[in-house]
Structures are given as C-alpha cells and as structure tokens.
Amino acid sequence: MLTIENVDLFYGASQALKNVSFGAAIGEVACVMGRNGVGKTSLLRAVAGQQPIAGGSIRWEGEDISALPPYERARRGIACVPQGRDIFSQLSVLENLKTGFAVLPRAERRVPDEIFELFPVLRQMLGRRGGDLSGGQQQQLAIGRALVMRPRLLLLDEPTEGIQPSIIKDIQRVIGLLRDRGDMAILLVEQYFEFARDLADRYLVMDRGAVVLSGAGAEMEEAVVRRYIAV
Image (cartoon, rainbow, N blue to C red):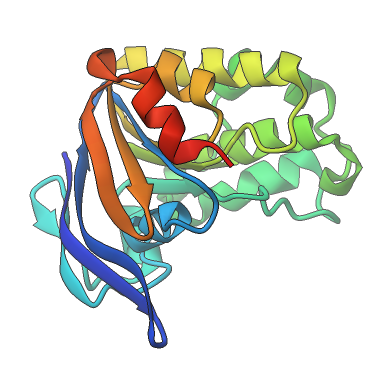
C-alpha cells in the first residue's frame, strides 16, 4: 500500500537518503532501524511530506504522492507521531486530541472511544495540560492524537525514546493491536532492537542514508542487525 522507490533526499548539499526503496502494507508493521543520523527520520519526513525528495517516488494506495503537501497526505489517511512527541504543552489533553480533527469532515469530528480503551490514562487526564504529563503519558497522547485522524498509514518515530519500561510495553501492545485490526499500515522507526524485532513483519536497516539490510521480520538475523544499530 505504501511504496517507496529509489528515493533521494538532500538538506542543502548534504544527502540524507540515497536510493532508498521500501514499503509497508495494510495489516503489517514495517520497522526502520539504524544508528542516530543515518536517515531514519528523514525517511518518515519524506513520506509525510515534511521534506521534499530530490529523486524517486512515494506511492500510497496506488497514487504518486511525492509532490503533495503534508496536509494533502494527511487527508489521504497518513498520520505521523514525531520524535519528541510535539505535544501542545499549554493545551489540555482533550484539546490536543482535538487537533486531529483538522483533516476530518465536520460530521466525523469526535474522539473515538477506542483511544481511551487503548490508553485509559488519557480519559483520566482530559482536563490536564499536555505539558504536565510525564514523557510516557505524552507519548500515549501523541499516538492518540494521530489515531483521532482515522489513519490508514501510521508513521511512528522512535516511540520508545525516553519512556519508562512499563509504558514501552503498553505502546508495544497497542501497536500490535492496531496491526492486527487489519485496516492500517504502520511504519515504525526504532533503535530499541527487542521492541522492533517483536513487532516487525518486515524490516529495513539503514546506514549513512542507504539501505544495508531488509527483509521479512521472521528472517531477521539479530547479530547482523545489531552490528548496524549498536552505538
């Protein structure tokens, strides 16, 4: 459903992505791994439309979206949970969730009960300011905000970063549930090997902007992958 073909991306004279090809299918989790600075976030930014590509193509549901602005991609069901979460600190939890309404028709602008079933803590904190939440609670809020958009493609950039182990397990469980629901594709950037290994239906490892390993999650060789993600 998502097809990335021979994508190049530059920041000025610096090339961040070099001939990258990959894909993500509905009902699957595709994991992108690698050390810091190898192009993982740039790949997600390219898919979300936050950074223009210099070559190649990005196709979603059969349509070439390479030139579409971010808001048009969001309208086509692409939602992004950025690294660092980007919660609006002065808005309440409920107001943060409602920012996901922007791409929805007026008749669909409601927060689905499913979000509170996935993240019960959010229901308890609807009136609390986003900036007053812990890092793990903010991450749950960021994922919930993306789910308000009813995405068919969910982009997750290092959701375990700076999160306590108990909430990492909750987030892993939620990603698995969303995958098993069978109505969205999930593209996950992750450095935590065990988290990625346990979720990946397919995987890609990057180094210096290029793809060095890829394949089915079940065929992932731990020792080889760890060599490329170890600091």
